[in-house]
Length: 408
Ligand code: HEC
Ligand code: HEC
Image 1 (cartoon, helix red, strand yellow):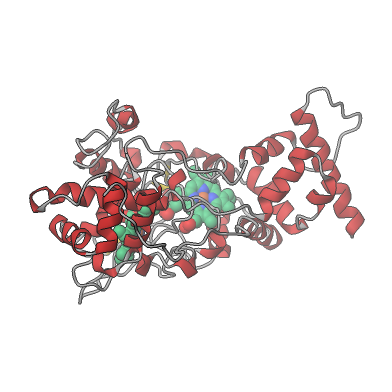
Image 2: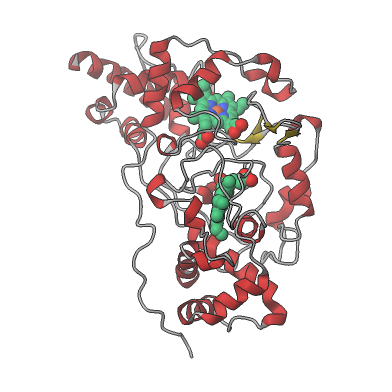
C-alpha cells in the first residue's frame, strides 16, 4: 500500500519537475496527473500570503487601527440595542460564520436575512464584498451591517458617541487617526473611520497553511516523501478538481477564488415572488454607494483603486450570479451557498455532479456540465476539499494591552 502511494507521488513529482525546469527529460510516460493539472496545483499557492495594503484606507496595516477594529468587532455596543456584535454572526469558534442557512438580524424581531453568513478568514484577499459584490472595499462593506436596520441599525451619531464615550476606544482612535474623535457635526467621518479600523482588523485574518499547501510545497521542492504523506483519496479528488471537474477555473489561485461572479444554477428564490438578483443588484448597489472607491471617503487620492468600479457595466447575464467563494477552510463553514441551502460538502458535490443545465441560461457558464461522478469520486472530491483546512489560525481576540495615548 505504502509503496503504491509512494510510486504515484513520485510520478506526480516527476511531472512537477518537468514543469519547473524544461531541462528535465522524461524518457517514459509517467503515471499521475497531466502537466496541466500540475500547473493548476502550483497556481493555488504559495500560502499563506499577507493581504496587501488597501490604498483607499489610510489605516490599513496600522497596528492601533487593527486594535481598535478588533475591539469594535467583538463589541455589542456597536448596535444601539447592544445585542449584536459582528462576532454574533461571525463566530470565532465557527470559522467566523454562524452555522445557520440564512443569518438572523438584531433587535426584538431578529428577522431572517436573505443570505448566508460567509466566513471571514482570508476575506482581505477578495476584490468585491458580499455575495453580490455590492461593496468594492472591505471598509465600505463593514458599514452595511452597522447601518442596516435589520442588522445593527446604528447611526453615525451612535458610533461616534460610542467611540467618544469609551476611554479605551477613544485612545485607540486618537492613536490610529492622529486626532480626537470628531464632534457630533462630523459624526459621519467617525463612522467611516470605525469601518476602516474594522477593515484593518479583517485584513489580518489570514489562516495558516493546510495539508494541500504542504503537498504543493513538497511538489515544488521535489520532496517525494513529504508529497506521499498527502492522503490518496484527497489526491484523486485533487485530480478531479484541477482536471475534468474544471473547478479551478472559478475556484482559482491561492485563495481558491477568481474573485468574480458566476451562475452555477443555484435557485435564487428568497421567498415566493421574490428573487435574489445576485450580481445584477450588486452592481447597481456599488455604483450608487456614496462610500464606493470613487467617492469622497476613499483615501486613495489617485482614485486608481476605483477603476474597476468605474468600468462596471450591467448586463442581463449578471442576474443570478454570485461571488465565487474561497474554498479555504470550507470544511468549517457549512451550510453552503449564498443562501445556505446545501447542508454538507457532499450535497455541494452532488449539485455539480447532477447539475440542472436548464438553470444555466447564461452564456459565460458553458464550461459547467453535469460531472456525473460516481459515489467514490464524490467522496474523493470531498476528501480533497477537507485538505484545504488550515492547520493553524492566528488568535482572533488576544487580550489587548492598555492603550497609551501617543503624543498626548
Ligand atoms: C446579523 C448577522 C451579521 C452581523 C451582525 C454581521 N454580519 Fe457580516 N455578514 C453577514 C451576512 C449574512 C453576510 C453576507 C451579506 C451579503 O452577501 O449581502 C456578511 C458578509 C460580511 C462580509 C463580506 C464577506 C465576503 O466574503 O464578501 C464582511 C467583510 C463582513 N460580513 C464583516 C462584518 C463586520 C465587520 C460586521 C460588524 C460591523 C459584521 N459583518 C456583522 C452577517 C452578519
Ligand atoms: C463557473 C464557476 C464555478 C465552477 C466551475 C465551480 N464553482 Fe464552486 N462555486 C461557484 C459559485 C459562483 C459559488 C457560489 C454560488 C452561490 O452561492 O449561489 C460556488 C460555491 C461552491 C462551494 C460552496 C462554498 C461556500 O462557502 O458556500 C463549494 C464547496 C464549491 N463551489 C466547490 C466547487 C467544486 C468542487 C467545483 C468543481 C466540481 C466547483 N465548485 C466548480 C462557482 C464555480
